View (cartoon, rainbow, N blue to C red):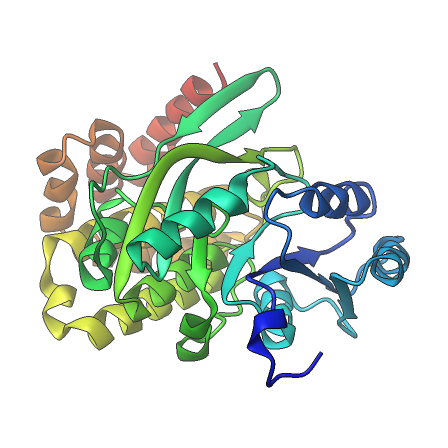
Length: 334
């Protein structure tokens, strides 16, 4: 394909990182090949898998001209795999999917149509979490018309726009302005913050187009160490905020983001993750020193009673906070 003939370029590059995903990869590619939007390319990057992922990816790519397979020499994490895939992509837009999830056949058709009709750099759709025997909806933000990237960034800080990659279509040109934060967990949030901050217009459609399947091995259920990743994500979001407007750092929206994603997530990780006692005590002490009553009260202002209880108890007593964490986990499992 000649780079000078842009009419032959794919409309969308679908980014598929894969690590030990032999069980799901071929099915995911097959579902993507059945998208009603036909002019797409599928970029699969094997992130140093130890199972048959690489063999499956190479075989399927050999059978389909629109599927391109690349292999990392060693496992470096999903962010680096996505960075490699984006570097190899040619589409006007990017869509990031996880190969063990599901999506509507019309997903890309509807997302691209919205991007074309609104001129948006980012389009957000509705999605759902799929748990064993249960589905929980994730509504797109109610945006009657496109908003600026700066306004969307504020909604991201407030939690009205989620930090998930998979329910969003991005103009590929935005990716040249971001760093792929090498966080092992929550790297989606770092990327979404940077991409939205770099955008001019953000739109949303109400259609539920993506199903995130929560499995026992999913990152959000794993007990991995998250302290380093949370620090990297905080730095990425803070840098994006400063790039937009230095005043954001002093805003209630930024404080609410830090409360949720940095301090409370960090405390939960420290108290439940695989740390020794000395590490745990050091992390907990550092996070509690950053947890001010002003930040605690931000949860109250937003009537976020669950996080208010978690933040207030963390400020007062680690033991009490542990009990509230256990109660929250029991209620979530019920």
